[in-house]
Length: 292
Picture 1 (tube, helix red, strand yellow):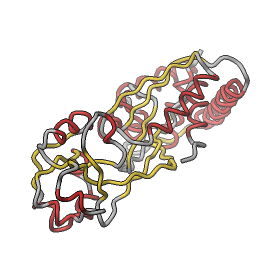
Picture 2 (cartoon, helix red, strand yellow):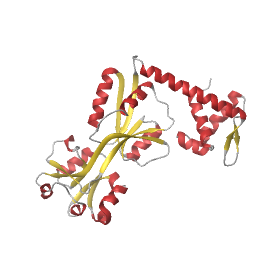
Picture 3 (cartoon, rainbow, N blue to C red):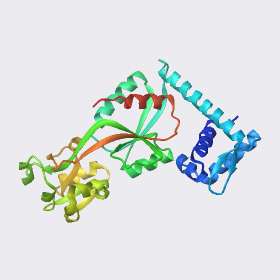
Picture 4 (cartoon, helix red, strand yellow):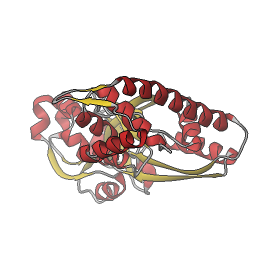
């Protein structure tokens, strides 16, 4: 019996015409993919590929197998979809990699509603920055990710979610800058700053700060906000963060937006050609329909 994943492997090679690119798309090694296809040909007793130096094409048997593989996978997806739409028990685990974002409150409400209807589904969260979450999706540690303005990679699908977040500064309430409704980049050069690691490397930083980018007094960086809030609370520096994130701990910090404004957009990021369980597919469908 042919395992379902081999159909995905075969179609990736047929689509890319190159085993190296297909292996990259599938996040497996080239040697593993090549061995799997050799075993598949032995199982079928047919040659499926014409292996050139730079290009792989399909034999006549390969073209026939391709059409059948597409039909089989379509049937598998239709079957999963049919079961997910029935009022039957959904069960299993959903692993989500996510940035720390204020909109998690809205997503938490969705999860609460989802679990009331499907109590046998468990959710697991792994927080991290964009690079970490990408690696977790590639390795299978998480099923999908929630990113702020992700750098687009070819191997992933991106769905814009209806959540925007404003970047600004968390400052003590007795600080001189609280007298202003917003803060300009030029004013930041006069004070020590605590900055997100991702912001330190981002194009948005250069766009916002221009020639001032190298004049900032960054005394600490962070990838998760919780510890950074304690640094800001202890007056180590002013904290560059998203609006709505100061409630994680009790502080006297207050938010002031940057001017010109720098908004970030939340995206759902999934791995291309990845088959999902009925529970994950049902939740993803609801997540993509969420309203701000």
